[in-house]
Length: 391
Image (tube, rainbow, N blue to C red; front, side):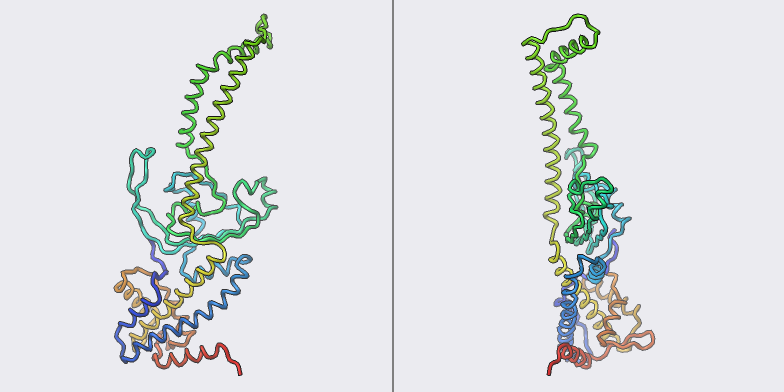
């Protein structure tokens, strides 16, 4: 079951127009509300533009600012307990991945917008399939900071074996990630053989080895046994290493070498096939990395903040006598459910803070009261004029 999220899967323009369809006491307020939405959006945009410059400079040094931005964009942090559960849950891709979380000084995983899908999972090497319901996260952001070289030296670990660069900071965004497969998003995820893979490689190799041993290597082994027995004194007669004996030994060595090389090639090809599977899954799910993710997150956080504020103000306008935060929360969640069929855990406290900071609502006791649109537009216009003042 998918838990309720704070994320509002709405676009500002369409949502504003739907809010304009609600009845206003003054017919002119419909156009005033459109102006309010544009002006409030512009003010938030200036605020986030200023934050963008600071965040671009500090996100690699301090992950707290990044975490705060993700919270504003209504992402949910994935706890270490949830990561451990994902590691233990059967993966949908036919791979066993191992990740050592001790490799990181910082590890943050955030998700947003989950849904349930029914997929067909192959069983018995594809001979039969079964349906399974899985939780898929629409967006996942992963931030990591690898430990310094000194730590790897102390623990006798080569970071290159785990595809890591000491001290490297990474920020990536992914889409449509099965929750059980979140470990594949971490930079140090390494492919390991499952038990079935070991059997699929080992059993044919064992059978082939017995066949080669009994058909092609038997003369060579017999000669080696005789030579060893003579060398150890168990046999008085010492065989001569003539041309025939050398040919037998050389042929056995070539046969054994060819067999081992063939089995090694099979093992290597299977591993390459698994790495290809992992690379393809990451390729089709990767949306961006580095500063590109920051720009996306900033835009998303800005829109979420504006959406929360205009929803709060519009539903507050519908209550002339005002309402408590709890009543406003219930009214917004009910309207979202009726209007778009959304089950959202609306962040009413955040919305109330923005309404009071912008002074578009006043607090009287435990009740919030919306200021008239005409007054609010004048106040917001004054704020806009005060952003830059030059003689």
